[in-house]
Length: 312
Ligand code: PMP
Image (cartoon, rainbow, N blue to C red; front, side, top):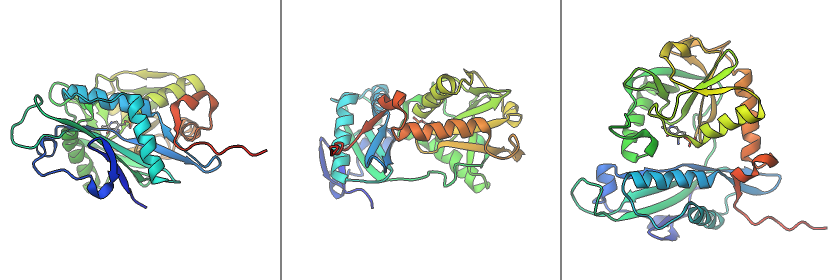
């Protein structure tokens, strides 16, 4: 099953009608920003739960601000719009939602000002992103991460994903599943589309938000679950390349990859070469949380369908 509807130019339309011209500014100059939101199907409750949609839409609108966009929506309104779209789709499986804000004016001239802004959204059924979330093999990229003073990575800007595409393709053609990318200063930033964590001596370490990373919503989720639920210390600090080689465990986090254990970096085995105990624990908890099964974190999940009335 694929998408039947899209939110496009202010309304929900059949997906075939959601088309833009080849003269669109965003297509020519990369002047757009996107998001990625997952919906998790809970078969027991027959409910589709959106994971942290308000946080995703807040980040999307902030990316829009970076591109000097004026968009007439609040995160709450976008969540409502998304729920309406998904109710039309009637999916009963895991989904991935792609919202996009883009410079919609047609014509030539690279700039950010005096252009029309639009927002689109569609959803597709979606399972695993890497195909395996256990034991991924990673190589250090020969590319460097885009810098905040060139193309800000925190903006999730479409143009910046040329950097991610270069990184991902190089990794795959070199026989890896994913890449780790260094910033220009030589420290670890993140993967092509995921945040990086490693475990050393019982402490979880991740690069700070000033390390040219996307401020990942899964990253924040994982940090909370590790420290508040599992009692494992988490710190944000610069990470040297060779620290990774000596890590006890490592993983990527992201809406797409979810939590993916890294078991090899530059042909060096991480830990004992299998998914480590901390990654296993936090991942199990994560999958409970995203399906709305943990009361304390119910505020992170937003049900799409009207709950069936309980019958006596
Ligand atoms: N970094 C990059 C470059 C990404 O594209 C993504 C995916 N959105 C992430 C990190 C993870 O962010 P999130 O957890 O919000 O999906």
